[in-house]
Image (tube, rainbow, N blue to C red; front, top):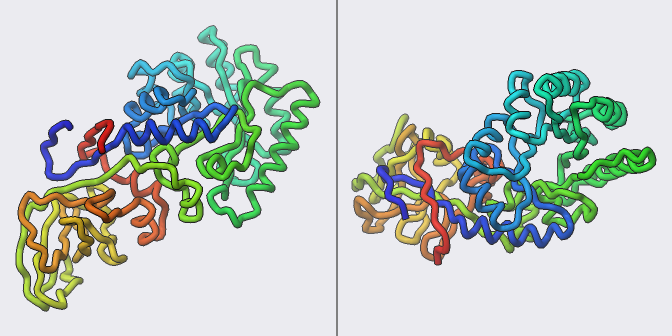
Length: 377
């Protein structure tokens, strides 16, 4: 394992990612699995995750930004890369030189992208994103055929795919996913009638794949699941075969014995009910530990036991109430992951904070060193 210069670090288990991808490739069946590595691989490291996922059977990659795609190309990754939303025109030339798959949905963007491609003397590969109900980005279903015909008429563009994104696939009791699927299926049927169906027609995200919602998708765009995290608490059961890849660690940097009634951290918002050993860990909200985690029952594992965070999390440090545990400087603590028989998961932290596991792992900042390993027992 690589050494780090801080008493705080992230461990990324590449074997877990490889295993998760293999499981998901099998689940996808005939569909290709494209691994989503946007936001620096959900905090895990985009290049490292991309290489690992591709070695385990992923056929392509998905990112959010042109710069993210360019980073992968600079790392000599040659697999197909889909940028999942439209980009500013200033990025078009680089996208075309990087030979990425552009997502388009606005008439003006399609014209501009075609013009840049024509100027460079290349054919740009595009996927059309259709808004079937999420209402974030995408062409409305009613206008989708017009955009298809516009793309096909542009000699400098190739329509390689059409797709949509589910708003509530991670909520099994929600009825919108079925409605979105029907709207998209109707559009695809019209493409078939006009003999305009492209190579790829796709809908599945992590939740849809885990729940086997659409057996006919050509691509499964899988993000959070490859990192071993269920898309929601409601999908924990179907994600049981996945292994979390990220864990967050620190070493105790200071220990003090405080008496009952003493306050801890800024504002002295927490007063000890009884005397205790208080350990300081050298990471805080600048590292991605939410400042208010102390107030919602946030815990840390020390000595294989759960110890509550006490007092406001500060920018670079946080304090932990270890009770009567004989804690020493240099002892290891786990904020995310396993120690002994105890586990703190991303979704557990997210539930306390009324958010989702995605935000927890994406929020671990770049100043926390990443340590990569394989085949950890």
